[in-house]
Image (spheres, rainbow, N blue to C red):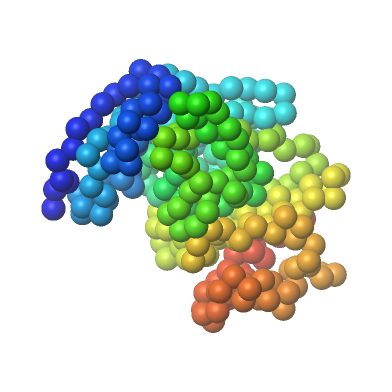
Length: 270
């Protein structure tokens, strides 16, 4: 199939893009890498009357280096991160995450902001950024606001973006020297979407242990204080299965896969 007819505009600024989106009255969509939206257009699962191409806006490809965080423009590609464009010192683990996302051709085009906005439950960036306590910087004609990634993603393929809002950037806190980060995903073969995944942030200096379980039926499962699923030797299987039950994950095979992902990710942090 081919897409339904649409117009395309390439604005020069974030402000122009938000104004165009607002004027589209719900019939516009923004596009950057098009790795998810492109197939949806071809299958006519999405039929916007207007596409707003963000790739020509310099601010959306900018990376800002701050002492306690790095702010990554929404149009920075996964390949950029894989190739080490992010300043190190506390974010050294992100290139390794990027390397395992899909295939290089997809990483060359797919953007970090597009992945978060698409909100696929099995998307790597959604789970990883939730674990890192990253924030979404959101732009609208009336101004800007910030929202933690775990609040920005409200469900499967659903976000908190309003009709005239655009994800401008993602602010990622740096990890301290004592903090350990673990990530594991279970796939049938390399490059495919995950059957189960988990990201763990273990910061003993600040008594913080955060576990995020992805590849769920909806938004990621965020355990802000994950000590509730630990016992004296590691992950408490009974406690973790109870959490999965509470979130409607009751299929036996899926529960075992998620348990394995959480256990493997946690072991990387101890």
